[in-house]
Image 1 (cartoon, rainbow, N blue to C red):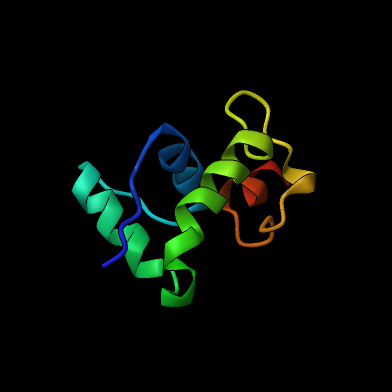
Image 2: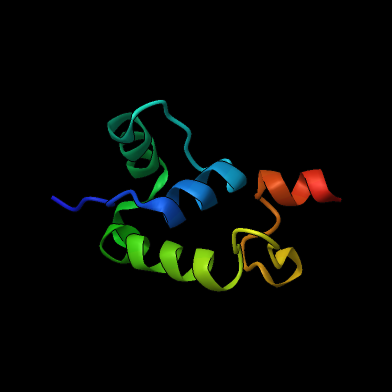
Length: 79
């Protein structure tokens, strides 16, 4: 069974994008796993971390460069 380990990068990205929200790490991880297609489960953790480190950075997100900008809640708020 694959897991998506929740760290600071995933927490920030998922909250900004509206992928998953939760009060506890477990609740957050469960919701994130629910919205991640099974065929991407093995690589999703790494893809999301890379995206959050280089595109959806903490202080000044580069929303224009986001590959997934259209479904991102934060991107829509900035429009």
